[in-house]
Each structure stands twice: as structure tokens, then as C-alpha cells.
Image (cartoon, rainbow, N blue to C red; front, side, top):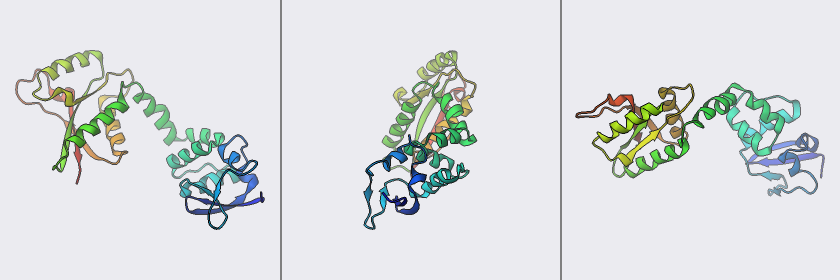
Length: 223
């Protein structure tokens, strides 16, 4: 294998040295070029890696000079995980963006029962109600404590709606508030490509509690 290596990474062309690619022997990137290369080549004979080429330049910069990227942190982190470059992964995890997501937000959401499943349930309900409509709405019940969960159930029993269509989040034991969780729900649904907003849901007749204590309407806009 030549000491100079030409690469085609997702359509972006790079030239580097074999020693740079193998700088971290335990990485997946190094293994690609250890022994007989396990990569296909393009029509020009360049080794082809089927990954986003835009971010590979940041990987190369780190391998060449130990320079940790300050741009596109989230995307570079995904590539560092794919190539299994452990030192870069650890340094990126210390950055405010990754630290805040992994240590703060993700750790909080891990304490909210069935959070990911409820996000998917919201989307399924919204899509089912989207036929011939510009918008569809999903009612969400958010409770932070066990006491609120009981009160919410009482409130649900007095609501004039299909209770199966109400998606319940909580309770949880962590510092973030209900408004923090609502922001997380919006962030994660929007990350899946949907346009969404929310507001307190005001129930109509004879409601035993103030409905906005628990209930919120998430509005999906389709066009």
C-alpha cells in the first residue's frame, strides 16, 4: 500500500498519508488500512468510504495536528463515533454542545418513562389525523410528580375526548420543569423533520382542575 493515499469520502476527494490514517491503531479508520485494505475503489482507483465527505476534513485535521474542531460539532461527533477515534470522541464529549446533550438533556430524558416511545406515538396520532387537513393536533398530558399523575387521571376522566389519543409524559425525578420537558418534546419532534408548536389545552365544560396545569395541545402543520 502506497504511503500516499487518495480517498473518495462520499464524493469529496482527499489526499493524505497512510501514517495519518493509522495514527490511532485501535480505531476503525486505522483498521480499514491495516493489512489488505477492506475498501472498494472508485473509477479513478481512490479508496471509497461511504460517509459524509464534508466532515471528514475535520477528522483529518485532528489526525494531522490534534486540532479539535469548533464547527459542526454534532456532525463531527457522529463521524468520530463511526471511525471509532477514541481520543477525539472524548474531547468532543467535553465540548459544551455534546456535554449538554449527553450529560444534561439525555440524562434527564432517560428519567422520563417511555419518552422515546411517546414521541413516536405522538407522531403516529398526528399522521393518522392529517388526512385532508393542513394541521393535526395531539393532546399531551405532562405530570412531574406522582400526585400530579393521580390528579391528571381524574382530570382525564372528566375530559370529553378519546382518552387513548392523549399521550402522557411523566412523572420524573429530576430538576427540569414541565416547560423544559415541553421544549424537549418540540426539539425532538422537529429533529425528525416535522413542523410543530404547542400551547396550553383549555378544556371546556365542568372541568375539575385548570386544564393547563397538565394538558397541552401540540399542533403539527403539514403545509
